[in-house]
Length: 181
Length: 124
Ligand SMILES: Nc1ncnc2c1ncn2[C@@H]1O[C@H](COP(=O)(O)OP(=O)(O)OP(=O)(O)O)[C@@H](O)[C@H]1O
Ligand code: FES
Ligand SMILES: [Mg+2]
Image 1 (cartoon, rainbow over the protein chains, first blue to last red):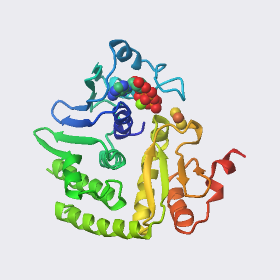
Image 2: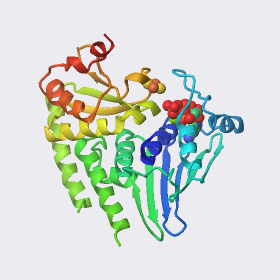
Image 3: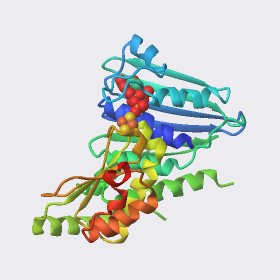
Image 4: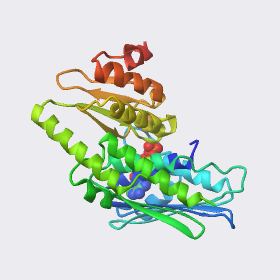
């Protein structure tokens, strides 16, 4: 993938497919340690220990349309090639926690890219699910909650184009604020 | 500032539009974008974004945009499908943001299928 934000969009699809009512997406950047942590945490159906072992292997998938699952192996590789690390913890009936740590000064570090487009897409296309997005740089952070937006919208779908564009613009502003100075 | 006040204004405008849409009782067009790993890697996100922005810009009111998983033709991703009541499904393949804009203006607004982008044209 050209941007980590595309991996995040893809990995979040697994949470949605696992029936997670709430998925939390966290991106924390430490400019001193030169590390970036991406976490995708869901309360979906979870996996057995054996499944967790298997999903890190590109030849495993529970999908039926194609023999191999590529999403997790691609994300894992993106992290490990920077000298970072990748973990999945999961429990059946509880949920799944995927974490990838990147060394941002590695020449193999893929840029984060357009996280705002990723989040607005995920949120708008999955009205029936809730998402929390937290982005931090050193000691500054912001949090976005789709449930709060839904409350304001009072029945207007998140997939309305004007709403989707507002979410993206809103996140852009918050992100710019974070990276100021 | 993309403030909450702005979101409230968007909500009010959308509520009025939805009410008008419901009163007319017209069945909408459904556009779905394939969002499996291969679709995302091939550029599904900018395609979905271009569709959304063009639908908003042209003020097209009877179109709903949604995502779907695997469509089963990796090599032709990004793929979008257009479902219109009473018509056969139209599958557009190897989409880009620019092509998505044309699908909105020609097909969704003017009702003319963009034949050259369809799966039939590409696989011939
Ligand atoms: N958050 C999750 N909760 C439950 N199961 C999961 C989760 N993430 C992954 N899985 C399981 O692991 C499998 C492999 O995931 P992976 O993303 O690598 O491939 P895939 O989703 O099957 O296909 P694709 O290549 O389109 O992503 C999934 O099919 C699913 O069964
Ligand atoms: S996995 Fe590529 S279209 Fe299904
Ligand atoms: Mg996947």
